[in-house]
Length: 191
Image (cartoon, rainbow, N blue to C red; front, side, top):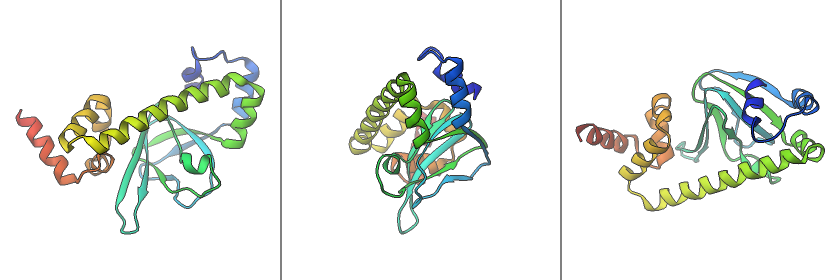
């Protein structure tokens, strides 16, 4: 929980009572590479905070093609937001890209925390505002940028991802084929 407290530090004041409550509701889990923490068609309503490693959420089509929605590294949150805030089952899966450690907080537990400590609700709202802005930016990039520009923007925004994420998952995130990604990288190296 030390990582989560460090994340909150400076954003809100964490009293001993809040620390105690967090300690009661947080589930710590270590994941091996490739382990799925959420499967599509599940009803788990959990907020997942990455303390170490890298996770990804992805959607799998009927023909087996994977579309990566989000990557999450240290101090990032990840979840299936559609199932978290609706009565629908999950449509994405979440897996560990590397060996990882996460903290899991069930939705009902965090809602109780919000009632007890309204500053947590404010913090979560601000995090969601940033997430919505990032998702809108991502959608616009997918709709308007060429494959090469998508990759260049990805490298500019998330340089650390390229070192730990397999090429086919980066291609999936960018909405391009792994072959296109290879061509773009070769061209980039030549320049």
